[in-house]
Image (cartoon, rainbow, N blue to C red; front, side, top):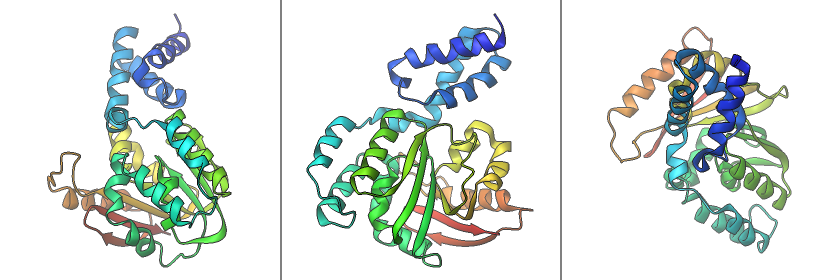
Length: 269
């Protein structure tokens, strides 16, 4: 069996597992290729690929939303992004996702503060977006902005796309490997919200290069201050150091914002 055949078999085997069935084949292929090169057998490579996938997506997989129900509820709501009904719907649904639930406590100030120098924002690239399109009512946007999100979950990105369509917002949300080929279009700002630790887990030596390759004039990067268990573990200090390492030698200008649940940086050249 050639390496290409092994990789096809690995992707198919992982996708057959209910837990990983909604994950983009691109990210499975990316991880599987590395594991095949390191492991003695295909069986070991499949097992280690699943382990890697759990590292980067376990929290989401364990609290999997019922997107079909969410969409039924959405259909009954107004199409205005700033309507009270849509904003309450967004708050309710963001509570179901670990990362956005943490940001809910500070959402009224987070985007306004971090993006003040750019407001109103005309185009956003959201990498590892999760259900962050639901935060759009709190982002200081122009009347007709462009939003593009990328994440690795097929069911989640389908929901995100339907949400954009419901509120008549230009843009799209793709299910793809956000470490792979990025859009050729240039954006005013790119979000990399709480995903640097995940990128580091996958390929730490690649993170600096990945940041440099993002097609945006500004990058809004953030880190969690607490772990999922609620412990600090010196995360604020450690992530501040990590951010300085990532921009070293890159001619970046940086603003830092510290909130009760999140540490954020706005970068530009």
